[in-house]
Length: 468
RNA sequence: GCCCCUGUGGCCAAGUUGGUAAGGCAGCGGACUUUUAAUCCGACGAUCGCCGGUUCGAGUCCGGCCGGGGGCACCA
Image (cartoon, rainbow, N blue to C red; front, side, top):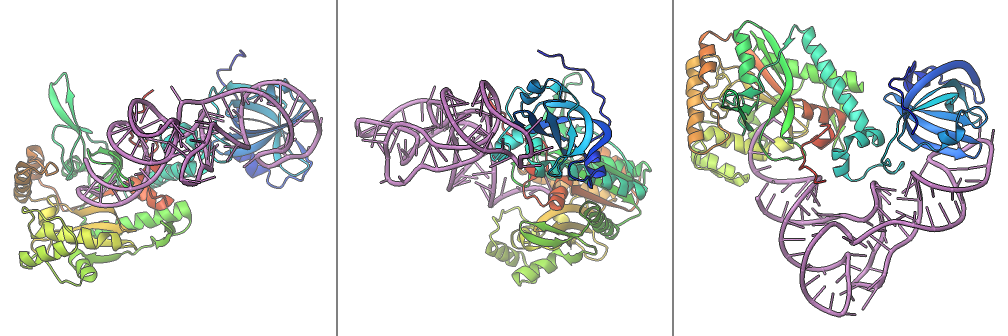
């Protein structure tokens, strides 16, 4: 057993070498000595001469190892695919012109005890890709690319918001009352305090407390947890960006969203045109604005609204396949009709505005449409990208909305909200006019990366544990 | 939770109307000083997800269970 060093002095990344030597003539040997490190991904031994392919986080480069000059040549040839090694030697190009690093010194940094997957086909079993992401990242270039893109997208989002004077904050993930969204929470227990706590389903109510506290522009990028099914669009834990901007309304937030998404697309992809599900999509601002009622009319031919007799709403809901429950009021019926008949058919980025108050317990009443709120969702490629509104800041109205929710909860709706007395007390101190936004980062990345399953943008998606 | 599809050696992957498990990569042994998924030769490696059933005979058919994928429902 050879001794494995505790550190390795690397002076170049593979990417730096590739970039700086793109024009090397075939057969050249430079006098530049570099040391690099990474995983041995391919190997071609030809008797007295061996070639390898070394990969690090920046790329791949060929290793050139003649028996005459390579120390421990036989041992070098016996390396396993997947072994980590450090290599020092000159930069050169082979007779065929392949940029290489000659192996003048080398050292094993870690041995692999398990064989890597087929070097050409990679892993086809998606289960293995998700469970053994550490392998997937080496053998599936698109996976690596997608997660790099995700990292940059989050970083650019932070820069975008900080440039606009937003500050990043962190609020509780363990909450005594789950609030800020309509969803089933995970429950847990704190032993020392002997209290039940919930993993947050949204940071919303805490962030608005901060606006009340005088932080005029706040955002949080963090994990939220919802105890629901998994699908190509849902993972039980996912990353949410929420932001609150004092003195702004939902119109300001719309501009912010379309500007942000266009910015991300240009920075990450160099274009606003993305391909998704084999279809093109233009993310360039400005995006279309349309009210929920207008879209229902466009897609069903029926001009309905909150004042439409409820029997007519029920008839239309039934026609588009809604499973109607007795508790559904007109607002819920409109939302259900929209979701059944419209949402999946909206392709180009669209701000769907003016949701009924009945289904928007935290949104402020619309300034000139009674019964509706100043809320919008952005729909892109038939999927919801974000949810935003002019924040409800009237404590009395908020209490009555909470109580309506509590009523639904008592009637058996596990996703309905509970009354949050502390939040109501905070509102009593005055929340200025505020625009708020929640964006699912995972879905945003799916859009930018052009992948159709959330598991391809979550490094370790939730799966049933393996049995060993 | 419901429906459909799927599960073959470490990885990829054939397997037709049920007849007793191709091939490739990796690993092992050998040849080879400019390869590019190197090539060539050799030996090895599989209770075909698990349990049960039908049959003279099951990877192939049937039932149940487990894992995974997709769709529906729910949500972002």
